[in-house]
Amino acid sequence: MSPAVAEQVDDDLWSAIGDPTRRRMLDLLLVGGDGTATTLGRQLPVTRQAVAKHLGVLERAGLVRAAPAGREKRYRVDDAQLARAVAQLTSVGSAWDARLQRIKRIAETIQRTRQDRTED
Image (tube, rainbow, N blue to C red; front, side, top):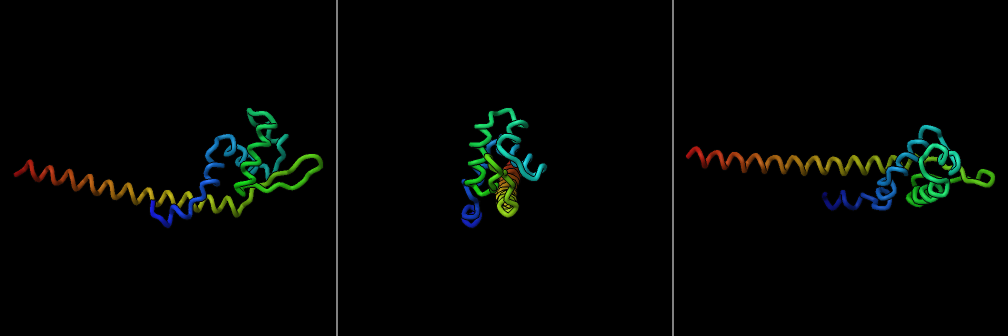
């Protein structure tokens, strides 16, 4: 990855997204618009307390925003931060595509060189 791409990647953001339960929570929030730890907990195979901890990680990464709703907090995906994550993923994907193309060209050059040697 180029230094420019590496600087654009937010490790905390990707650490938050790296967990399958948190990704599922983001999916549920995107589909439902918002949710509380209780409502999300009903849809996930983890306890309400675990959901609350996962929501805290997502909130610290800026992926969700919380608003008080009675005794609970109502969470909503932060569209700008999610768009930033998508842009980072696209950038990292492009960098890897370029790397793989370079590796392919090197491998093809090595293969041609070997073929040329065997033909001589």
